[in-house]
Image (cartoon, rainbow over all chains, first blue to last red):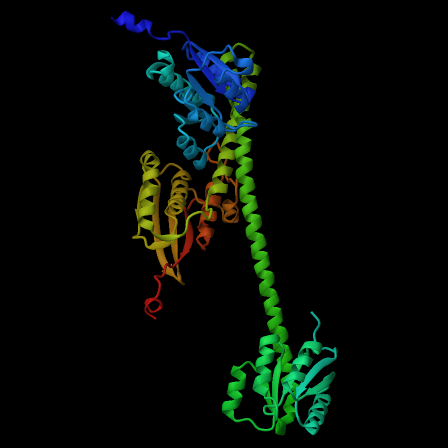
Length: 154
Length: 384
């Protein structure tokens, strides 16, 4: 019984989409995720337009898998994170993918707006590496181990 | 500003039906060594025409004329050029009428029998006009400077906020990657490399503290919320609660007077107490810190005091310590960024008060700050 149930799940590495324009942050997130020892694939796009193309499997992204989790920076060139957030949460095919807002903005308006647009959580990028590691570890512990992601059932 | 009393020719407009009286008045003005040209009118229409065309420096008006009156002329002047001196020069004037004219805005009145007073009346009226204009000019200038200052302060605050916020971004990169470097390569490069990395890490930490401080300073004392009646005792309780761990660790004893209610923003008041009491506990040597928070009412304001038995401050530094990033000790001996008292000063100033310190080295310090008395709205305002 248990075996049958298990077979229904997607058991591969978790696909994560990181929407981030700063190469330093991309690399840092990659490095820290590596140290967390959770099987994952980290895809990176640099702005909002690319993010939407990736999620809708358009253009260069026709063969990618839909991610199980999105890490979204708010301040992006062209289409910024807030617009991406709003667009995803309005799209019936994408709205159930959890979105973690990962940003440096501690502005009250940004925090309120992100949650109003149905962000699943809002996290500040810490300046200190140990704290950043704690954040990424906490993230992967919660979203990749504790939480049942909808993608596992697709 | 040109002084019409100096040597410029005064344009005098007379409202006068008697040509001989006009001559007498002109004689008297000449006798008083006033340089002038005079024109005479006796009807309302001519008066208005002259007002418009000549805009006289002084108006000398009779009280009653066949087709016009002094009071009517005065009213027209007050409506059109209220600062122009208007002197009644008349044959007879009862005290009631004189009072009525002065109330209506006449500058002075001269009885024709005492025409000898005319010169000084004209001079006095002009002097008062100039003084009034200078005062108005100074007030306008003052308002302009105050507005400029407010704008430039606002810009500065905005700049500090944006700069400190944007500076954090690159700093975060430096900080994170050098820490990553340290973590992965510590002991695998040579001893010099480890030292260098340590210096970078240390520098980044200090820079982060400074930027955080700047950010905090730019936010502190902002005129965000309206000032409302606030219980200082409550604000102090909150400050002590925030400092609980430090108070326990330093074994400090803290005493207080009963505190009043003032117009404030409680968050800022708490921050003020917290910074001052935090400092009082920090800057001491080995003995247990004792801190007393007192208050007295004096000269229309509350004078709060935070007195400690710490290391004290050399009087020659008592001004400087309220400036941003000013420190008197190495960060090693007494950690901090030098932002706390600058924030206190900003908060106190926002409340319309002053802050200062009285101290001698080794004999503790007392920080004082004032907040204007909070007076309830007088009851007569509501009933009348």
